[in-house]
Image (tube, rainbow, N blue to C red; front, side, top):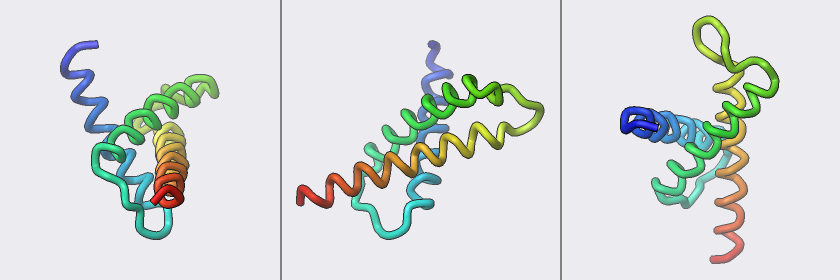
Length: 88
């Protein structure tokens, strides 16, 4: 992977993580780097799931893939913020 691919993954991960955070109700006390990490992982997993379902390559915007990524990010944000809330 080249530097522009890494940079693109970080930007997409940040957007997906932020959207996932918006979907989860309530306030989450997560650091920005945790949101970024959740977003990058959710983007990668969402792309993998979309590929397995055969909906990763569509004409125009890949709305199904994006919805999968945001849903996975929301699950990740809820799980991490819930786990962090129980510890402290």
